[in-house]
Image 1 (cartoon, helix red, strand yellow):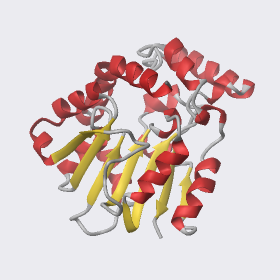
Image 2 (tube, rainbow, N blue to C red):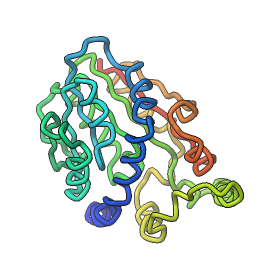
Image 3 (spheres, rainbow, N blue to C red):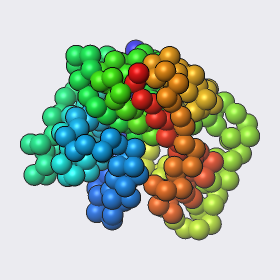
Length: 249
């Protein structure tokens, strides 16, 4: 079952990925991200926010720090352990649960906002995940999903050349190569088995979500310019992050 392989991979990545989040929290990237997120949130402050695939807790922590009622879920217990550790004194303010993003254990209409980053691409059933995320949103609630066409280069020769050019540019500019801290073979094996690696997005996301959002769905393909630091921009030049947002109705 691919889900167990994904869990095994991210269990092994938990500590290293946590260090990435710690760097973001320590260098002011959390405020860069919060300003972006805040621009899409409803104006009231007593929002209930669900962070799906929280990983080491980056979104959950920065939102809890700003006073929001945050619930964070992840399928990998090792990630949740890192998230609690990274949250420090905020851990008691965040509701952490081990849960499958494709099968949430929350009643319909529980949250005002559902947010996620770098999750959808490595799900076995992303369409089912979207259905669940919209289900747990209140009417008028908002979905914010930040993602990219990660590993699309495995199925597209042009993208493969662009990916290899990124690796050369990283070496030339002598910046940290974000791929060196991953088990590339294991991740590529998983990427070949999940549907999103073959799909050009965010067009797919917009098509899926239009049935849930009554037309109130859009994509921002320039968000990476606002939220990535320079090292990320060099590492992922061929794989820019996008934001898919939707309002339930």
